[in-house]
Image 1 (spheres, one colour):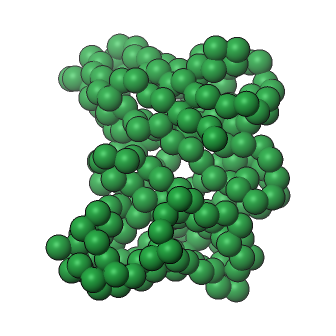
Image 2 (cartoon, chains in turn yellow, blue):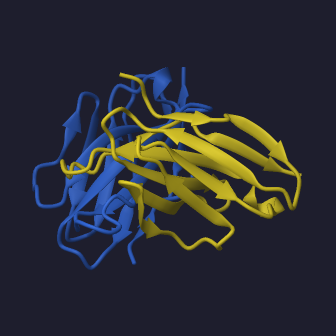
Length: 114
Length: 118
């Protein structure tokens, strides 16, 4: 069974640009969450999607947005990039309904903003 | 809001020895999940062990076990017979069992970097 796949793995952008990151969850997983990981702030929750609906959102500015498609694949977008957006962006999927709480993570997309 | 604290930014252990990583959390909820996740360098985060708060028995997975003290809101991870492959960042995480919105959101601690000395 394929794991959570994130693309691209690495990317470099300049301030003011925008970026789109993609996440394909494990087959059968309907919940996709996004986390930002930085050395200073650690892992912070961005948002969670289930059945194409955003169920919950963390404390990030509106420049951070996301969506989920009917096949459960998800994308997140960051507009007007700032230096502080440099981070590892992790996607995680889980099975809705089992309530086991386990999240399965992808390897992440490492964004560098210059 | 829940908070998770890992007070040991870095730890080291000799190969084959035992090490304990600490985690404390703060919550007003009575039922929840606690997790330890492992993140090796440049590799994906994987679940090490899970504990349901309503279970008094401490979870165990092979060489990994937890000491769950609900009243003290403490959740430490013990790694026995440490191996070189155990070297990684270890994150303690909390999740509510509430269904619906926010049910799959994890609150993470800042992590503990574990080094294993050959």
